[in-house]
Length: 595
Image (cartoon, rainbow, N blue to C red):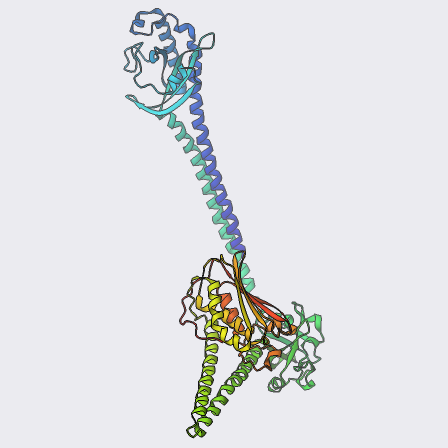
């Protein structure tokens, strides 16, 4: 990451952190101010309740007759004094005392001036008293509530109980604080800390501007230093990381430079060229591992002929000993009067494998096509020479039909493999009973099994759930596995098919008593065009595509396929499909016939 970006990231983190801290601080102070307001008003009512005491409530009738009662006048005097004390210092609008009479909350006295519209007649019952006051009068704790509104405006209220010597609640003292006073304190807190926060933010912005200018200068100097880097260093870095091997040798055959690809190819890890001054790791070999002629080696200080080296099919040895083919070219450069040979190579393993597969395909296709073509030729010759021999003509026509069918099947197999590899095959899942599907395929293959006298049995679990699969595709998997089992089983043997649930999958297995698979060839069994060596000489024909295609179908359906086999003792091929089913895929074509 660039220096300037690091500065911006770090400062941005600090800036956001400070903003969050300021907001938290303001929120905390506002919360504290609100709590102080509430505490102050509640404390005023508590002190007033203590000042009133039970002695000031003695001798009252709690009715309008109290106007002429000396006890009432003393109580009024106390409340007027309380009002003068708390009003200027605590923002208290006025204070009052109430009492519970015959189950009703009644007005006793307050701190309002005589004749003030807030002043009520003693003994007046509240029609809708706040729920907290009656609760206090019934022995509840002090309370706080608001905001509420009356004819004088909005206010907050607090109330506290007045108790007698025994501790029993005999009255409640209340006090009101105007909402404007209550809110003004919050506003003052917001203004103070908001101003402080703004000053902090402005200071941070100023520091950010200064840091931006400074980091810009640092970044500018760094770019200038990079721009002054030598062209040779940049080219070496480029060569070191390209995807082809580049190795430079001097006249003595010592390595002057080797890039990452070249070193990894022969050593398996990135190393400096000085670790192999002799250059033996890049000795060119033939396909048998023998060194090419000295004139074709770059280490002798001479410039080999690139065409001659390529004609010799050059190889290099991997770190673990295997050979790999390379495409190589050479060039010569002069540096300070010294001649340097540069060898450039690339790994041709993939290309060689593709060439081998093409050769195998052509060989297989020619071999497979030759047999039905020979049968066609023989059948046509028989037809030409039959001379109105109905039996010979019928046999020849049957031969033409059979050979044509085999050619059609071969072309279909090749097309299906091409379609599934190109992702063009449609997958159309529908609810499928795999036990019934296996039974249908087995019934279709019974004539072939009877011809070879192979006995087919099916064991399917009775409670198998239907699975959403492409019935046509899975049918071909069953058909391929059962056909192979019949084809490569001896006369009188058995082929057993099992379909059962295992965990979250349904597993199908086809077990035969056939020729089995050689141990050394098992890992290639699902390769395209591969046929085991112990079946190639058998009269049974095959393309080597069936198992490859079955594997592709099962994997496309979300399952897997595997086998167990002992040469000469039979094989068991199994595949699983998930109970959850397979996903639909919109392709261009549906499945054609496969062998």
